[in-house]
Image (cartoon, rainbow, N blue to C red; front, side, top):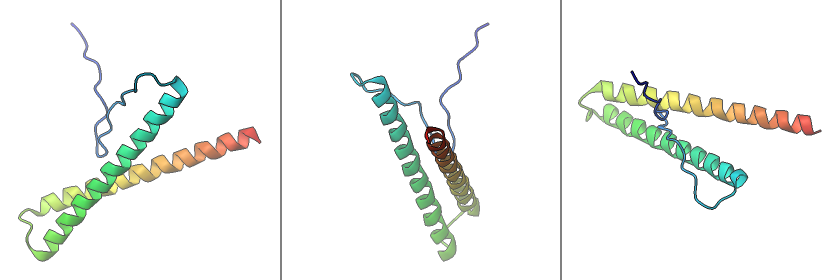
Length: 103
């Protein structure tokens, strides 16, 4: 019996495992990958919020056929925003701690 490996993380922000560019040093590579991951996450958050906003307008004008679509999109946007804020807070706390240790 074989055990399958765990796949990439999937959720509101749809984060995939980053691919490393060839010929780049490890430290620089890690920074580029992390920066790309953050950029991708913020872009996905913006797209999620735009979708929820568009469905809110449709619901307000009466053009939305199924109210569940708006509720799901609204909840997904709220959770994605909360996750982004939590990651930002942790990053700031980590940076502050590193600066405190160097001083």
